[in-house]
Image (cartoon, rainbow, N blue to C red; front, side):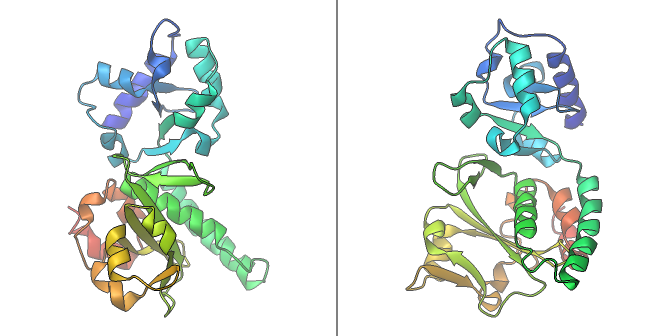
Length: 274
């Protein structure tokens, strides 16, 4: 429902120029049905008061990304056409785009990627497949929990934040079973974040479980003398999504979680997430 409304508003807004307005000062824009159509979030709210939060769009599958992350050159062109001015360097660092990925196409592709990845691994072409699983796992966290992925002020590349600005450390464990040592978390990164999310991604690229923890809890309960914290399965099993509903309220897009979860996890979550 919200998708069709906002796509219509994007078409309407993009159909004429707006150089005499203040919409160029918006920091949140929504992509419409194509990468040639966008609409400022304030325009959406002005024309339809039912849009009281971007969380409504996230619940339908929209994802928030910092403009610098997307490398969306069509937005530059659209912005200049609409407002008769170029996107300033300051705005580039501040602007966020809400866009809707095709979840079905991604789901279908995950199976193809798994088969391709397996062949390349079997023939010793790939010996380290971390990059793809990490990025996919981060995308899972982003769409499921409605995280904002924005340019980091440090040297880390991109940070994850909640809609309210809380910082999130996202860790991906790409295995069918967790190492006996556990999932390794850098203590310094936990100290810099409000929440720690661990996405357990199976070798077939589906989600086999999730941890969503307060970072101060992680530091307090699993503290170590060194620079690394290990979250062992036996120590965190009561906090897994498959066992605990404590953080189900943090799920922004339930359908995405069920779609990309493996069958075992999906069966456990289906009734609880209603």
